[in-house]
Length: 268
Image 1 (tube, rainbow, N blue to C red):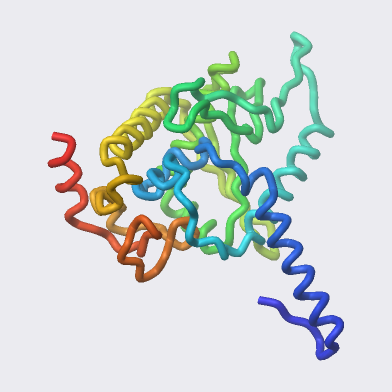
Image 2: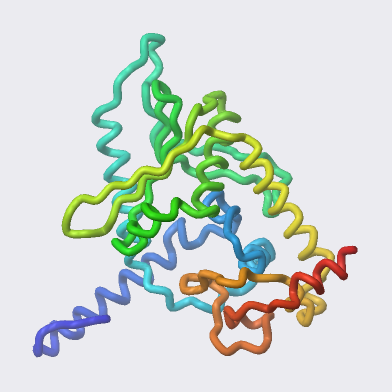
């Protein structure tokens, strides 16, 4: 939504600034990333993951970028604050690993090496922590219902990445901060479990193998065999296309109750 005063110059300037923000976001490193990252592996929707694995052309390209931009800015601010407060352990190592890239698995994932930037690892607490800047309603949901499998899996994948780097965490955490007029912070945490990360990677491989078996580029009708959850979270899906009857051109977001049975018959 673009608003300005009644002045024509102000209205044109508002439109130009909005266009600048959208264009800059589309050309940012985050938006141009093609490989799957740790934040996506736990996505409940197998169809969305399949589109991502195959680098399928996106259809929902008019998504509002402002929440992600604000989140990126918040991550940068937190990194600066922890850098300014960095301390040393008795052995001389810095206490915090801040925005360090970690490799979850090398080379043989569904889309090559799986790596990402870990927000914060506290060597003293043996804790890997991930920042999530969310709306107030989402903050309330995560406080009441927990982080959901997607964020939980992401936390343990980054734990595995830290372990691979020689810094095995005792715990993982996701810190939710609400975009609100007052500070609202909720932390979810649990002991690090390597098996949660390994199971998520095995699921990703299964989805990749199924996509290859379906030959979706040659047989687009097979997209109907790729299931989505009964209650998918489609709003920000890059492949959402309401009303679509051709899944090769985008997903309408409606559950397909027969997809699971069809898929099982295909790979049996």
